Amino acid sequence: MTTKLEHCGITPPPGDLTELTLPLTFFDILWVHFHPIQRLLFYEFPCSKTYFLETIVPNLKQSLSLTLKHYYPLASNLLIPLSNEKPVFRYVVGDSVSLTIAESSDDFNNLTASYARDADQFYPFVPQLPPPKEEA
Image 1 (cartoon, rainbow, N blue to C red):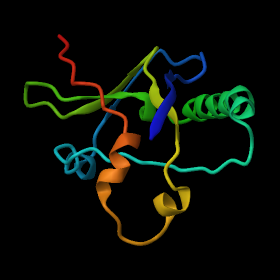
Image 2: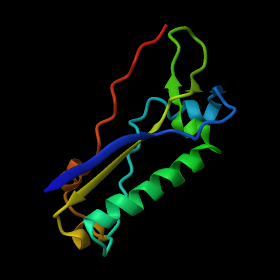
Image 3: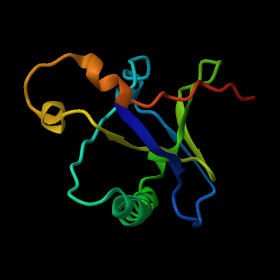
């Protein structure tokens, strides 16, 4: 059983950058039509749930925000123009990286082991990507 504890968007800290457009390279364009990669990171913490949510999660959020200050494209959106122009990554103030904190009663050793197992047991951990948006 998996329980979502928190879902939020982490933005870079306020700064000088208000908008950034970064064109994709030839090598990036090859990956545009592939299914997006979704990473799962599992951590076992020998601490209470309260301590984790009140101490570790805020530090994690702040650390991620400070990292995004140097890597704005990670918080950007992929824009694919309807015309024949190249796709670009565009960051505007307010764009964010999605972060989901969840807990599970599943067997941690089974989930993190390095042997083949049914992929269906991992689907409850994967958050849904937001639907594509159309802009003018």
